[in-house]
Amino acid sequence: MRGQSLPGAHRFALALLALLCGCGYTLAGRGANVDPSIRRMGVPLFRDATGKPGLDQKVTQKVIEEILKRGRFDVVQSASGVDAVVDGEIVSYTVTPVGFSEATAGDEAAQPTTQASRYAVTVVARVRYSRVGQRDPIWASDSFSFRDEYDVGEAGTFFDREEQTLDRLAQAFARNLVAAMLEAF
Image (tube, rainbow, N blue to C red; front, side, top):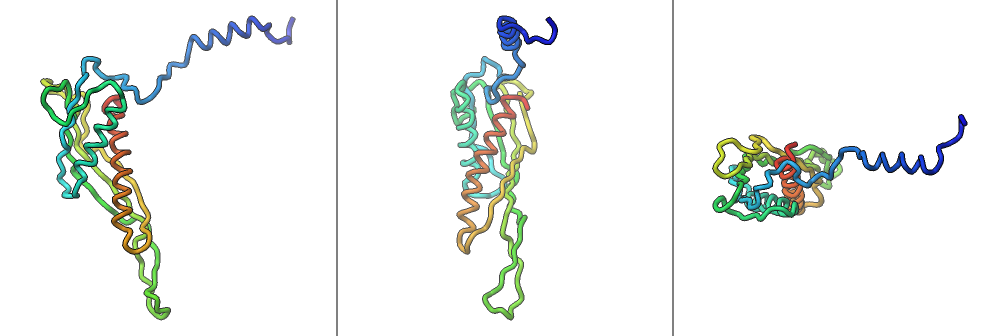
């Protein structure tokens, strides 16, 4: 009869069919485009052309941690005895004021001064992910970048907040870099 709903068995069959067909999506972050023969990956210390103390170590360590999270690679901080190498150079580290506020020197007659109250930190790197012995890289970028911002608090906390931001930035930079390299985005 028209206008009646499908019997329970038909609804179940349709639901089962929809489940079996699937939508084609897979979980992100699983490295679906990785050569299965790559088991051991080398991540030597990123070279640093910026002069920012400790930046190379922080970024390299976060990249290693992100690759290890994938669970399918043995990672060493060397380019020898490995199947593939992630070679990187940090080419730029910039801190730019992006927010401003007015401050007075305590004297009401004094002219207010404009001070930076928010900064953007940007890191740019040249990265090459390649199989050992092959000329062409699996993935490469001459300007892989990531940016984060932080607010300046009370006097004397500027450097502390910059360091906290740098930690967050290195983590996010590494997460996005590893996703780009291993998932070919």
